[in-house]
Image 1 (tube, rainbow, N blue to C red):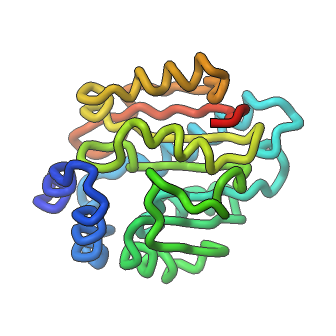
Image 2: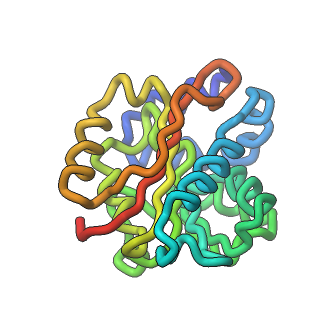
Image 3: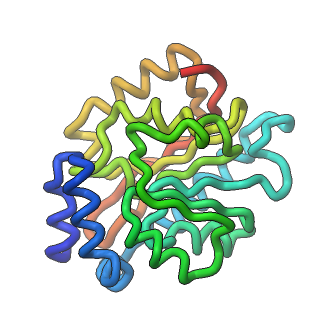
Length: 216
């Protein structure tokens, strides 16, 4: 694990600390992560495909050319995998303006927006995307588990939410309690759960997909 990767896990979910940290890491991020055997992007695609296959045919996420909102898009590593797999209509949002600037260089996103706090999404993003992906967001030192409800709010009713969970994060937080509550209330309908799959070279992660049905 690189020093930057280790440092990113000690930010306690503080929005200002996260913004400063990723401002300074943005230029070197891809090299640091790629050198560490980053398996997450391909697993996000696999989970998305499996989720779409389990959706009702009338779901907006099942339509050809469905738009994907890459939430916490960073420099665009998940976006590259999505575009390569055929999801061509991509929008990206991230807390870090500098990470978004790196993603913009790829030329694969229709729109990109920095300065977005996923624990308090702007009103114009709510319920707007048929598919929302969050790769590397629910990890140690980043967003709190309660943000699962906030990011579910970005999904169009009937659409698909796909997330990765770093194993340490799942073990150390009440994410599963939050998830169970949202499922019990009918907000999230579980479709896919892949456990202990590739994440980084020295860690595994879980990957989940839900259909989002109800008001938060």
